[in-house]
Image (cartoon, rainbow, N blue to C red; front, top):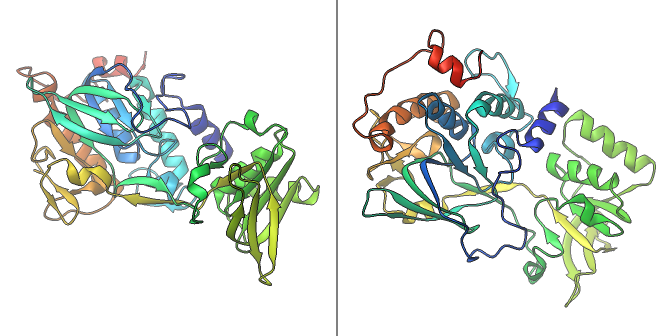
Length: 373
């Protein structure tokens, strides 16, 4: 089940081939793509953001979703992908990864378009009541409604803090695994000891890379059993070298060629490399949300609990990013908020049109939209 869910996430079941991801070397100020005129934009592809797209889909509204991470899932994938969750209604227990896979499957009939690896840089009100939204990847939107489901902020990769290393980012230093085809004939050093690092290391061992080395501060690794088994197999057959220690420097000017690691005995180990992949986890940052001119309290967006509208017309906030009296930071509360926000937004998406409350148990219209015969 775990492996199937990981494969489902990688396959991106939402509109295959249409996910808008900038190339690894895309500059934040790159020329924008064609401006997309849409009805609804969801910022954040975590559980609440995905359910927001589902609730809008039930109302006949198609959505685009922007997220800073390279895959959908938000905190569930970034922070506790393989930890159990016990308070999702109707599901006795599931991991964060399993919950995301279920939500992706649920929203799939409505085919929201994912724009991953991108953050929203600016939101500007337009004379016609719409908003112009610009991402760091150069994508622009004109939208009638915005749903901020950014959790505690945009997740960004924790950097390997070695002065001067940043000049090699995007060419030799990567904070997510590049295409395995690019590994052909290269020596790869991977830093990290959790799921993402181990999965990348195991995949690299299956690639035509010349050599693969995994570096972690100690020989205690954390991942799902399948990935740990792959790592053990590659270590035993010599395909994967493991070094216990911490990176403390590097060598190379025009080109990075060596990572310097201090082992447990404080002896320096020089690791020759062509590519350095770093997986030290992610951390949330509020980012540009604070500059969008919305009313805030304690770094969270104030909302009206009738519709979870913010202080700006047509902009809503759901999940951990919002604040109101009695707020509880629970996924199931976010699902409730997303439902009311979807109905509240219809006055902006289809002004003057009455919105009927329909039930998925009996509505033939909703059955058709869900692909149920």
